[in-house]
Length: 253
Image (cartoon, rainbow, N blue to C red; front, top):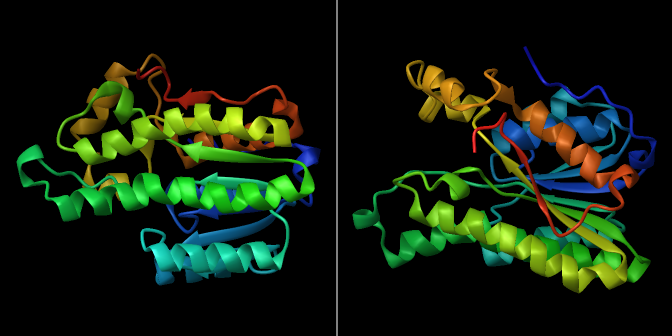
């Protein structure tokens, strides 16, 4: 069973959207869901092989795929400058993340900064670049991806939790600053989402029944469930939604 988006949101047609971490997992679903709405999509990812697969799977659609390591200050600034120079941004989705596990005792200053660079820093600075474009034309939507782990306090990922918790605070603060410019800022907080990476690294067969038992609705969620929430929040249908984060977790929290 899949939560593949089937809704039709006419206000998204022709809108130019940027999705970070767009070549796989939740990001890929967001990219393809936006393309299904006839949006113009810019996907950014550091994985060249995954980017090529995304590009091939969506040949003929209004998709541009750019390769960049968004944890790198210079690469991030460069790719966002290219995107802004290519045209105005209507929708910015900051999705890229790395949920690698690490015990508290093994964290170093270098690993801590690396964790924050991809999970928190990139979200702010990509949003900042997009907001400048949006302010110039009088409006837009920024959607930031958090994680239910920050609310549940899961072990062995302190840096990731700090970053994802910070995103919800960032949503509230930026929404207040950017609202007068006609820009909405919202968050989406996914729960235990079934992706290839999660199956490969963390969600083992014996772990899945434990997750389902904890959820109020005992069905697996996938990237399309998250993408549908992103679509709605990015559309004009959600014009009253800003400064809040919306959870998609089947009642896990």
